Image (cartoon, rainbow, N blue to C red; front, side, top):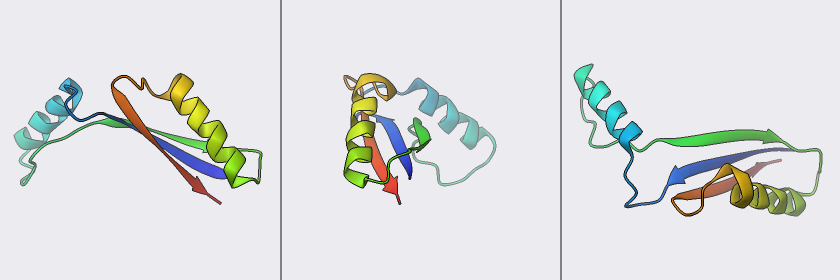
Amino acid sequence: MKARVTVTLKNGVLDPQGKAIEGALKALGVDGIKSVRQGKVFDIELSTKDAVKAEDALRQAGEKLLANTVIENFKVEIND
């Protein structure tokens, strides 16, 4: 079973890397950029076939390691 955990900064948390990317895109002449927020994506392959167990394991991983839940949100997507 494959899954994806996406980690993003919470609203209101400053994102200097996103601001730097935004400035670089504008400097390169990419039109229409209003703002950029950066994040992390983890593509994970699990040995279980049980989607409920997989989601539970990944939520634990998100809370304990993949995301700093003080300043970041995370989302789990299971791809059977």
